[in-house]
Image (tube, rainbow, N blue to C red):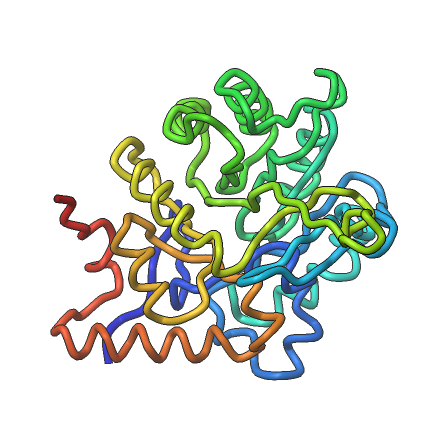
Amino acid sequence: MADLSVKIAGVEFNNPLIAASGTFGFGREYGEFYPLEKLGGISCKGITLKRRDGNPVPRVAETPSGMLNAVGLQNPGVDVFIKEDLPWLKQQNTVVIANIAGNTPEEYCEMAEKLSDTDIDMIEMNISCPNVKSGGVQFGTSCESVGAITDAVRRHCTKPLIVKLSPNVTDIVSIAKSAESSGADAISMINTLTGMRIDINTRRPIIRNNTGGMSGPAIFPVAVRMVWQVASAVNIPIIGMGGITTWQDAVEMLIAGASALQIGTVFFSDPYAPIKINEGINRFLDENGLKSVTELTGTIKPW
């Protein structure tokens, strides 16, 4: 069988599949289905400095080929995570990634500092959050803001730092290059696309927040395009995500330029998806005479 292990920013993963933040909680529920070491890693549910109860319901809704969510970063806060969840996660023999979110640069920096003093493996920075100091504009929507927040967190973070990019921008390549030049060790992309659906009978949006993040198979072509564009512009690894559902999707994303993958929405329909996807990748590698999954990354042949 081919070698499925990959290395991202010096961190060894036993396979390229990482559970995406917000879709896997802190892993306890899915750990009842199979040993979590079958995953390459877990990007934990987004953590904030203080506890958050999230948005009012309804906050998740199914859409054709996907879903909308506006959960609102419900989580117990970074201190509770470090005390109660991280020790259990570190016993699961898989890479543990802390996903952090905040409303000010200071919140991000404080969390990065706290987590750097733990045995977390990596930190993933969610920059699709409103910067209250800049009038609520998302950190991830301009090169300047991406560079500033990445540089600030880098100075407080001693762990490998992943910057998670928003697709809701005009030039994803410039955004990625800004993250790289400001100290990111890797990029994960793409986060959800902003979407909306309306109940025609009540004339109200189907989720209470009015708009939400769209994920699932419908956004996969957008994700592939963006990963391909960024892969040719940066020298740091890309963790590709956005609608990956099958092993064929996974292989396609690797060929586009990803070095590892995150899967998320598929968990809601098939908890066993990562096992099936890894088996499919392995068969593909064997059938094509490839000894390692790393041989796939960036092998696209554009016209």
